[in-house]
Image (cartoon, rainbow, N blue to C red; front, side, top):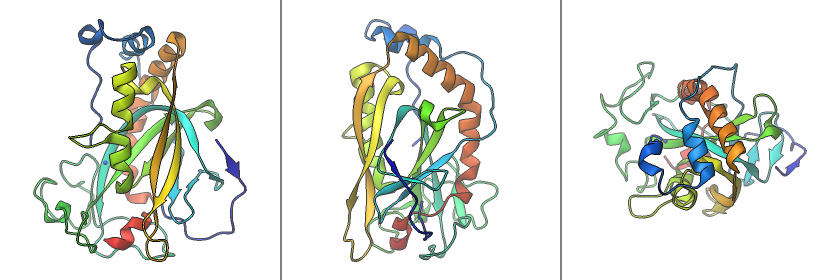
Amino acid sequence: MTRRNPPPAEPRPEPRELVASAPPSQLAGSLNDAAKAFLDESQGDRQVPASIPIITVSHREGEFILPSGEVATEISGYPIYYFQTRRWYARSPQPGEKGKPPDCWSPDLLKPSPDALDKQSELCAGCPMSEWGSARDGKSQSCSMQTWLFLINPDFGSPPLGVLVLPPSSIRPLIGTRMQAGYLGRCQAKYGVYEIVWTTLRLRQEGDPRQVAYSVIDPVMGEPAEMERARQLSQLRNQFLAMMNSVRGQTASVPASVEEDLR
């Protein structure tokens, strides 16, 4: 990853459920050896390590904020897992404010968390805050969706794992829509499973910088892992799966996106 020293201290802003790969028996005839090896190892033992470093996005600068406070223009790794969460604020976070718990939030896009302070609906489906056009901009959803993308890269240290928290603007390029595949879908179509594809994530800025500028993820597809590395990736995914899922409960502590200014 490309890094530079941290800037002076300033406010730094900071999901659809993972669709599991089909069983190896259903895909055996169409997958390459590395994809088969990844899936064959996917049933191993699972453990829970201590913590996972969180990487966020500084929208106005178009940079990633690493757990150390350093900034990076790009992040690389194998995207071994993702999930999505929702959060809603009765009063949008203001510039300069520290991250605060949302008034209502969901760890699974199905229903609000039992810990939500002000539930807006018993279920996320049909909630007026998740309707398009409910936000202050008249277009987006008042209850925003975040994508948590987990990356394996030895440069992250021990464990070699980090999670990148992405705002609603990055859902379409990463995951896609019903009509068009996103980056992960294209990786899966080309190599059988997206988890074995080395990926470089950059940011491009959109919006009017004089008003509310925000950054959108811009993934670059690298080469797939060879068979032995694919086995290792699958083992690491298994080892950290329980912990990756436990991160869902941290949604309330992650800084709000600058896109919340529009909500």
